[in-house]
Every structure is written in C-alpha cells, then in structure tokens.
Length: 198
Image (cartoon, rainbow, N blue to C red; front, side, top):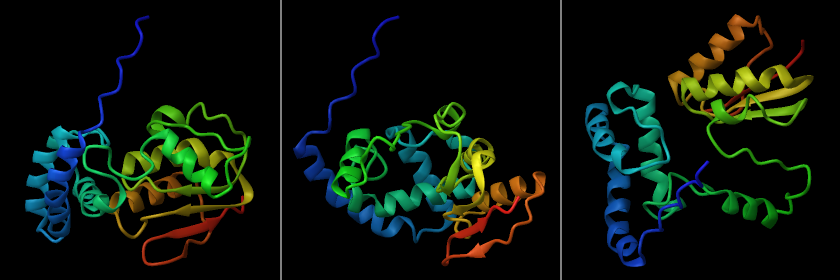
C-alpha cells in the first residue's frame, strides 16, 4: 500500500499572530450567542477544521454547544489551526504525562476516535473508567467497549453528564438497557460517578 500522505505544515507564525486576536475575540462572545447564531457560526467554521467530525447539516444542539465550548476556550489551549484542545497530538500528551511523572510502561495511548480504538483496546480489566465524550455516540461507544471491562467495585466517572443532554441520554440509555441500578452520585455541577456493584 502507498505510504500515508505527510501531515499538513503548521500555520506560519505570522498567520497565527494575525489570526489570534480575532480568534480570542470570537471565542469571548461565541458561547453567549443564541443557539441559532451559534449554529450559523458552527456551519461556517466546521469546514475549516479537522478536530471534530463535521456533519454540519445534522449537528445536534449539544454538538454545536460542544464546539462552541472549544471555540470559546481554545485560545487558552492551542494556537488556531492546530486542533481543538491542548494535547491534540500524541507527542504533546506524552510530554504532559512525562512532566507529571506518570509516563511508564503501564501507560498505553490509543489515538483516534473511540469507535475506532476502543473495540480492540489492549486491556482486560479497569479499576477506573473516566468518560469525557460530551456527545451521544462517543459516550455510548466508550460505555459499550469499556464498561464490561470495569471490575466490580470499580468506579465509572462521567464528565459533562449535566452539561450535555446527549451525554446524559447516552449514560441513561446504557444503564437502563443493561439493568445498571448503582446509585449515581453527583460530583460537581457537571459530573457524576457510580461504583459498579454487580
């Protein structure tokens, strides 16, 4: 098979310097716009990025809000044009783990979408499952492929359960379909956890 194409070059420092003030200003107001305006902005910006799958015509309200969150906070995380959030590249994630003294032979990185990487993930049992998928498909994929591997007595933590309706619906649907009745405990204004008892 032919080799994969090389990655695109990073944006020039001049382009980043010229775009960054506009990016910061847009981020400051985007999350405060009415949903209809956010949806319009989403439709205009999605074709120019690669960090999110983009099906603009069928984007749910939660998908639009999730994208607006990254747009609003992205200038704190990475320069425009380099992905949605800090740690978008494997070397960057590895360096963060190393900097915190957490990089050892037990750490396994699975770059890619949950639906592509989790079905064949090289682990048998989990003590802790922490989900931050935001949307229905990604949250559901993570639960489908990882929750059966969560040990009895282990904890499942779900970020954004109270932030995104899709996330909450994915968790509630999965729990209902699998007869999971373990108590949901609210951690903070966005997140929940439960301890697997069976």
